[in-house]
Image (cartoon, rainbow, N blue to C red; front, top):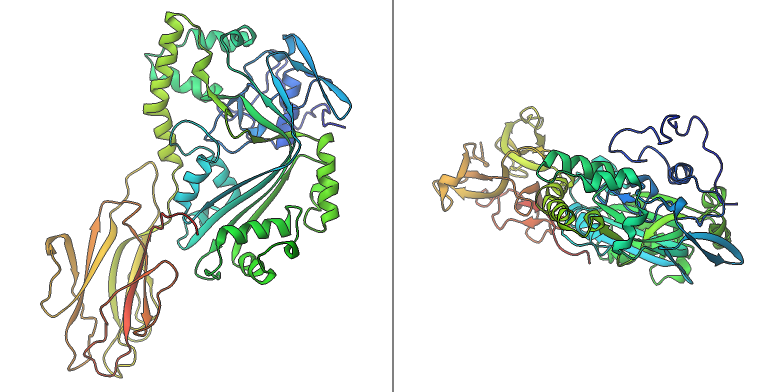
Length: 515
């Protein structure tokens, strides 16, 4: 049966005074699981088992920055559906009540939602645009934090993927009309109609209490998801990552099998061995969901159980959200409030949250050179690249490249980033040398008869497309740099006669579509 059990005292405290859930301000039901949040919402709205599952979510205020399609990210319920005239909806012989303004559509097949990104920045952008919502904002950023480790998203050389199959039972849509105001909860309606749009603090508090949007197109059923972060320096990059990620999903939890895929089991194994993978099942019988991936029969048993355990698991491709200011009155005061909220959202609220939720990998903010014996140490906080820049010269000091990295700060000030370097012999200088810092240590230090060679570094204000994420060294004229890296044309041991052919390599942000 559908999970409508009463909420235990340990699950959610209910205020005897007002019947509202006691929760941290602005956090919605984020401290609850999907099932717990659904139960809490239905309890607060006084729904019985006859009310169609999903009605607790449709029309609710939602924070699109919080995460992707989850009842736990609902801010507040704003419609009094329990007191609205009811219609009926029948699914597989069972008839449910449904508020008259809400439309229900039976879904005949599952849907697949795929998101890929060659970098965490690109992944965030693609996830935000996977649902048609106006504006270029970092929506669903909370899901990035939940599905990937903080260390992974800050690491260079990784690409990201998210594959979700939604096994839908029905879709719910809420056509937006002025008559919807007749069904608003009185406290929300009063807060909206009396909102002081001359006060940014008041509008900020309103959005954080109710969400900036309300749900108008959702899918009810079950879902299986796999989120993967793959190490591009270890994985076979001749593979098309999007294809392999999908094949891995199908062979693991998507109900398919590797044998039915055009992608070889070897490719899937290579992908999974070099990935951090997060898998989750929502909806359906929980005991069956844990068995997904063992056999096709296990997946079928779970998907067949979704009708008895349906949850809000996905958005419709269009019309999933509507700005909450669309619910203002159609009079002069209402239009003033709508205009004020819209302006504040577009110019202040959304840009601030987008900036705060932007994730970038760590980047290089200083480099230097160290020398001495084979164990020559870099300054504190620096990492030493292991290749001796005087390798195979047979003489001279051991010389090493040292790099210092820092975290990207989405809300504060970032230190300058390394954006270029120059290697020159003797008195050679880079163009616009005033923009570079010379590291006054000879890269050929101690190698008699060799030309002096110096490294110059250029530091500029942080920009995600120009900041160096890493530097290294490769050995050999024909040697290829690691995946995504660039290779310098200057041989660091040219003129040393016996020295190895060494070249600096560097990596910048990969802001291109995943191939």
